[in-house]
Image (cartoon, rainbow, N blue to C red; front, top):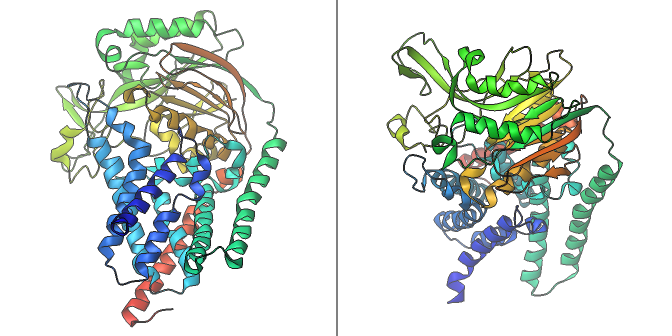
Length: 544
């Protein structure tokens, strides 16, 4: 009986170990062994003539277990118009992502048979990193939430070298250790005892584990921020997104609450007040912002603090003028006045009233965009209604910064989901961002791991780019993160809060900020060469 369920148990064990290495579980070192049951299962199946379907099914079980254990919280998002829990988010982020990983693993299983054993680890690691790199790109099924390197987000002192490699370097580390320990397990199981060969593998593996840790701790202890202080206040208004924000609480009441909280922390030295995603709700026409009652209300802060700038999330509309009516983008909408787009945006407000606006460009699947929009346009009604603006939103093609009126400071406006995109954030820094400001609303998923993971992953963006972070959440966790990834201050979940801190701006570029796509591109090239080699050998009927 046990023999029949052994492989499924190994698959589930692999998924659970990997999932538990992520926040909020924080059994971080499980990441180094999480893939061993899956890889050992594949090794045993490869030794016999078992079918490819078995490898695919078992690997899908492993990846489904991992995805579901880490991201089950997506299910708690409710449709604003009906109040019902919806499955579209789980379908895309859990079911489809598990499928992508299982297909990758099946391809590895098939191709390794044509290659020399010495090339197997290179094939496996390169293919895995390539898939993670693809997830960092802006495509229809992008979901970098579960990049293996994210497992270290609450242990920043172990991954200070992310400023060189980025989070993919952490994935490379995890995959390498799993493969090395797999060899020890294989030797042990084949000889039925822990022999000298297995012991030597463990010694080498220990060095591969400890060396990056020692280097990281040394970098952590020696890193000093250049002193360039910027005083920032972040506001967490804690407005219930389901029962208040778009229903019972008026915009005027929301602005009053935000201002009241801000005034508890703002001083004459405050340079920025950061408000959360869609803090200005219900849609503002960008051409008419100077006439907005919400903007006018927030501007009362300038009466006592004229040097302060406000950066706020904004739900907005803007007119568009299509050149033709054929194959219009799905984000284009029409009313009696003409065509327009809706945006999840950020705006900087200062005493010049020269509004700088950024449109969120990486959208959440199922909530802000329909994947494969042209193909699935008839299903666009399935997009979750989160109140305010629904349907596929407009985006902008390039990152843009928010500049102080005297151009002395450049801020990266990062909205919600964008903060998990390593390369995307680095592009801001390449353009000259000195601080990273994150605006989000993590109240859609109740008190679940989602908001904790989202905050933790931001710590890695700080390390990668050596940029301090201010983070304002409508609810979730608001706070400040320094350039080492340490939490300087943070709010509690589901509380009204305003926090103040002085962050150091930075103009120096880390190695990762200069070359954010180097490791991903290298993995992609390596995987492509090995897969092409396999394909050639397949047609020649040879193995190498």
